[in-house]
Image (cartoon, rainbow, N blue to C red; front, side, top):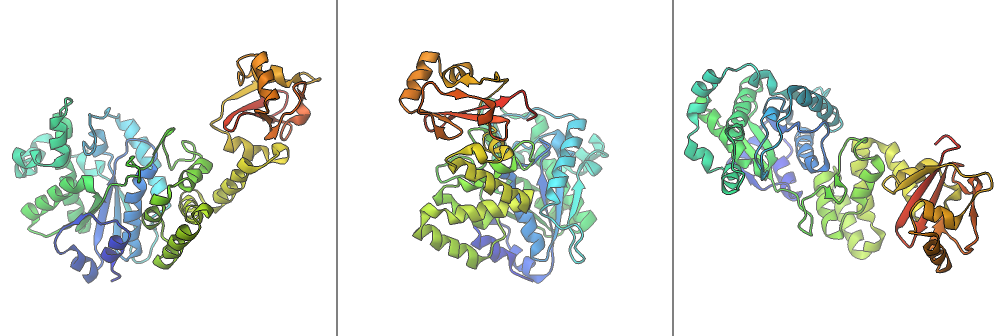
Length: 425
């Protein structure tokens, strides 16, 4: 067997592990699993570390199982949460499970002749057990004292919110998942983030008590940025794998904007690049950090897996729009993609056009016509990235990119998109 344990160590994806797991991984193919909480119909980049862990397990010859928690998703994991989540309906959970399943299929090979991946839904067993049987057969193996010692529970008990019995039971349910996978698929390994260590060891203990068998757990550190911010969070919110929630262009840009201090760590954790290639990118970053070669490689690799090579090419082409001196000849779709978050106004222009002063005031890029006039005179206004030098300038549909869009800019960053109503956009 290839040594996945050493691979995880080198990639910085090893925080804690059970005794003997390295030897077990080297001795024979193991079946291992990771759970995914279906709180939304899409995973976000914060989930990618976990997805990559499962994908690496398969690439090193082991048998991966992804649990999409249709059962536990009805409860919610208290790990890392300061307050209880809003409980989802069964219909919401079912829709979320379907969305996550599609995204996992981009990383895992379900048709491998030797070690195909599986996706299972823990609602298949959690939805059929009755309370009395569960308490008698499973609950009796967990003391309250044992559960109170778990970090996820202890942290919530210290908060003003406290923890409900609903979430308090999550640890027992996840332990039962491990037992079910052991019985059904001889699964002997659970992986996850370090916040899952308490849940994982609870499952290991349950299997030891009920089946007298040794099983294992491996967890990796939770990812934060060099500045201490939780990975995957931006000013605009979470970065999603779903192209409707986060466009492929903005997904690509998220990785491209990675801090130099983080980029090597991200290359190790979020790509399948080999050690030699990553070490070459380390040297490139040290020698010419301004070229951002490592960031470009990171953005290309991750975006290719999630969205496909064609979206990488389009994102890179669209990004060039940001540095174009004159947007008039640019592709209108690329312009709209880059400026998707910019304020916009739909309007029809008179055949004779409209004065630039009036246009700036109309779309509220200037508070008044007099302010618009001052901005133009001071050289602070751009039309399609070209500085406006004439305060008497008139803007017409002939100036529109693709006959559809005019981009106004005040200063270096404040942009506004004007979409012409007399054409199909």
